[in-house]
Length: 216
Image (cartoon, rainbow, N blue to C red; front, side):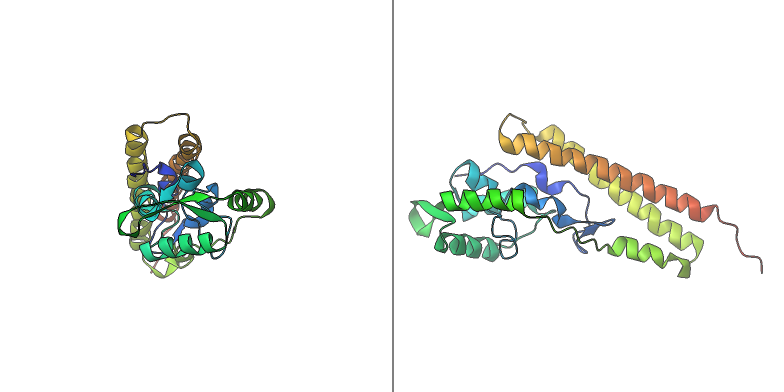
């Protein structure tokens, strides 16, 4: 079965190379329960795709590719491995089997209880590490022109990402299903966050450009 991705995964404007977005880790929004959520650290992170209906590893990989890659990247081996582990521990159950070893997984009662416990009784990991902002602390070793170029590049990156989110917003057939409702909330976060990123970076560049130049 083919799975439709929702835009939750592309919302925070993070630099996937460094895993941060001006101080907000890509992991921040993953707790919404869409896709397999780093199950080794958070065992309640079963898939919303599986909460909604049975899904195979292939279905979940398509969901990651189309929506979650920017928030919670995962490889095929990680997804399939965690599905098997969750089935072994009773949090998922095999709902159907098909040709070439295809399995569709459904959320077991214990899995739903664990998902609800994770959402209501545990706190998200709010550790902040941002290489983008760390570099800002050291911009003084560059010339003002170089420092401004760094910041204007960050502004352009944020603007480009916001534009891609706007395209995604227009392309999605929004409905009343849970992924649409909560995915749109997360998408709005991304639109607002990337707008803030752009505004801040341009402001910071103006601050540097306006500083008096040393004489001599």
